[in-house]
Length: 166
Image 1: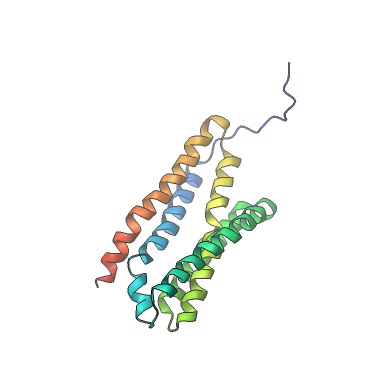
Image 2: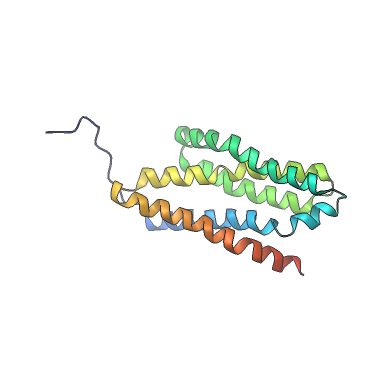
């Protein structure tokens, strides 16, 4: 007896594509993590307090919360690759803008932009994994993406603190 559900295409994710997604998520999370140990001192150099630091952190998180579903929907409509590329490249520009900021409002703009653009990467990468893996391989693919994010968060703060010492 046949299932009433339509057959799901069984695919095998291309190892090169998985590697690119893996590295992309590591880099995004490295960028996020590297800022953590230096942000309190950086914000203080603008004359800001702990209140502004908290709001700056919340700005990033709030924009990620709001924009992740929108990026996921957009990647369904226009494809995974353009959304991933925009997220990766745009987030790099936002991180650079953060480092070059000369006013407190610029820090907020950079963190908002970084939250908006970095939120394009995770849902789109996970959607790609879902699209390109068989049911049997999906958990492994999702696990690899989780590991990539974990690696970035483990290495990022240490690297950021080390770089700040120079």
